[in-house]
Length: 215
Image 1 (spheres, rainbow, N blue to C red):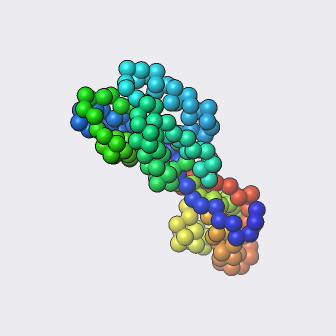
Image 2 (cartoon, rainbow, N blue to C red):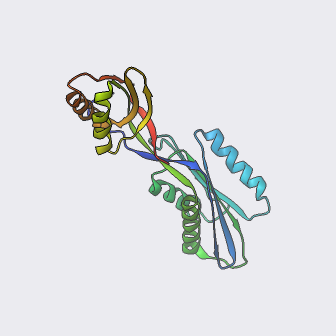
Image 3 (spheres, helix red, strand yellow):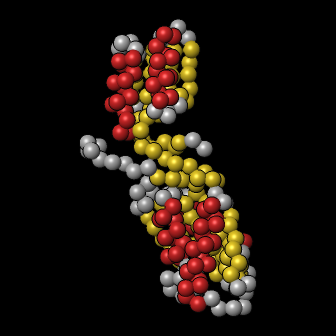
């Protein structure tokens, strides 16, 4: 990987949610799901079309890939630009990747006009995402730190100062802890640990990858 290359954090859907709004008696129901491939996204869209077969429209958008490499949307019969694109714009603004949103519309008898449709589909997509469980993904390294009982307190203090929590710890003759460190903090963290333990800590570094933070 090129030095200086920045891998931006992004978010994923841990559990998809459902949001619903009503606009002039039209119901807009948003369903959100995680999808890592186009097949998964399309299968979810198809399942919602079957579930809500009696609805006037099932509009959707999805974004796939850590760098949002794939983006698709559909107005499903609504006037061009009033449904799929507003849903996609909500997804892009959320910073979430690998997700699909289907907004189902049951027509209430009153035409909403172009601006009204854009607002309604936007609000429905926002409600669906607000009801979902979202997790942040960071780019970084997995470190395995092995030190003695004297050094572990110092190591955990340093990690705590940086808001890095230990994932696992193994207490035998030595203490092994396993942590994930953001890409840009790796060198500083390793230097601090080496200094604090007078070079006694053994540190093994994984290949960099994305990992999830918290719940």
